[in-house]
Image (cartoon, rainbow, N blue to C red; front, top):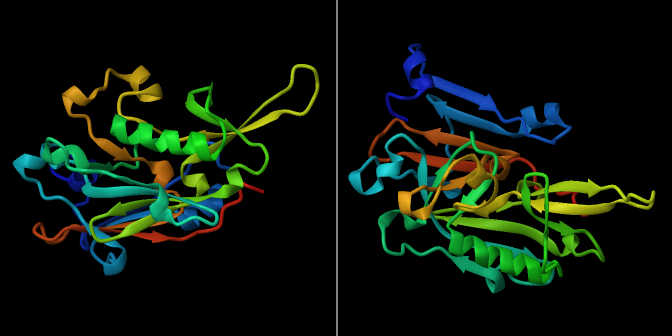
Length: 255
């Protein structure tokens, strides 16, 4: 997007198109990832209208979107077995500024970052449903829930509702598995660690000094985009779109 893009500068070929696949940290099935996680830009990109959402225009009121791919997020919904998604839906309102419900699609960032108040609501729901009110901090993960009594199996997916479409994220899209050995030789404790954080919390805060006051955006990171084909239609500046095609809906974290 824009003149700063290395691809935009170097793609002086016809037809104008570019694609790449998304490998993932701590994933062993890299070859499988090549087949399932792709990003496509330019000529010949097929956009599914029912699975697409408009990219926000490069206007002054969306300053963060001048060189970024931005969409509007409406809500986040947690689906538990036997429960309707709407029972655990978190609305993302516009708030005081136009950018409050804007989220950047960024494959260069691993984690997903949400406004702090939205993240706290999400975390509270997970604490209650996974029956772990005090998640542990492990490695660079801020919130790790112990797997016990089938608690992780109860969570089926998390949905992100955008303007025009909804994407369902399976557990691998927002949880990493982590095991802690027992010092006395017993069975290790197994955890699932959340790869979603607050806007200026955790690993991101330790990397840089981020905060709401400097207008840092919400980010849909690469972990959330895993196993999707993300296609960008950028040919018409007045009608740019992005679509999300889910290539894998099964989850094995609860096995």
